[in-house]
Length: 514
Ligand code: F6P
Image (cartoon, rainbow, N blue to C red; front, side, top):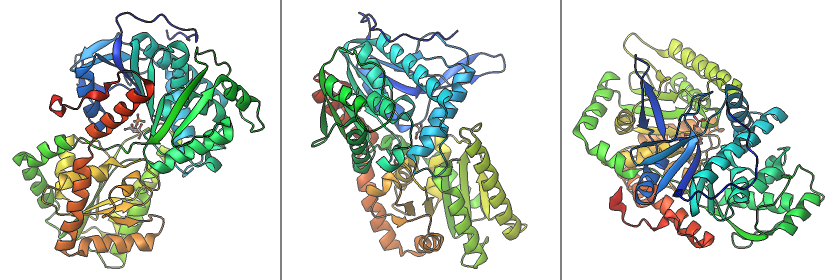
């Protein structure tokens, strides 16, 4: 039974954790064997790798959902993590996760590529679940601990936590874009969400443009102005905002014990676990697998690769359309080139994802039906998740990586491809609507809506002289190798420690702890 939580302050636990990460999902996945016994495995991904050393060094805990409805496992330890599961009912998975997080906020924050849906029942569930996460964090954090809240699913947690535990330092990082005011304005709960976020001492975004969008929204809907990335909040300014002419629903009360505080908002572009990729790419078994992949494709001259979650933000349809037209125009042939499209299943019960799958599979079927021969397939469409070793082998096998997202907070696939190309071969076609485009400037940048432009870029990537391709790849590699996810977390946590005046986990300069 998942009880609703009240928002009174909690007793500060004497035996709490000095560093607490709060994210929608815990950093572990569960494997269940045929006897029904379950074991946990560390989830792949940069955030988990980046925070593992911080967890190990400081007394760290991670609060999150373990991925299954209607059960709440007891807190447990797994490798360097102390894990505190937050339970969600089946109804809350539908309303908080699939509904408000992924059918309201996700499309709204991604340029309304799909129409966002606004439902009060979803909002109530979002608020209730955010309260639960905040309470769990409050009960887990030691006195004056640092709490780092992750992502759009938990935007109300900073302020809720501040009310429960005024002594802790709170950071928030938004992994997805933050929309311009004109789009954000559509959200019926726009004030309450901004008030939730501004409970943090530091709010990090992927791009400077996201931080600016956020600051403009705060100015417009809360009436508080940021100067040089910082804004002063008092109870009076928030009360004024609630009464101001900008309509919207405000959070109901503000008895958090603080009468004034400074909120910082800035860009901290996230990166990848470069060391893990370096190790895999140097491993003869991965190198052998990369050669095998090319052989299995019939050794074409050019291997194009797309790797995405099956999400409408990723521009998979645009990429397939461009590829199909290039075959049609006889600029490519199934003998000379192959496209591998890995589309890992995601949010499969959300309507827009169900529709996208049908569209993608329809177009793949049409292209293959038209162009396949007995010996060759035009598009290898793989609707699976793969182990990371296989992903690195795919990156190594590919001549051209296609990242054609219509909007993407960062796009770590682009950075992973660059990190995997130790021999500096390969070219990257990269959408200008990704955060990564601001750092990987030597990629072939494209507007994926411009199908002719995309087609030209795909041919240019294939035909680029080796010396130029190597020069570009070297320069992108320098960027990625010198700005990995460990640097990202250190930079954020050091700034948070200085703003919060607490000892955050940011003093982990000894990277050999990894
Ligand atoms: O990019 C935002 C994000 O939440 C990532 O952290 C995550 O890998 C991805 O979207 C998919 O998330 P989920 O499967 O939890 O909806």
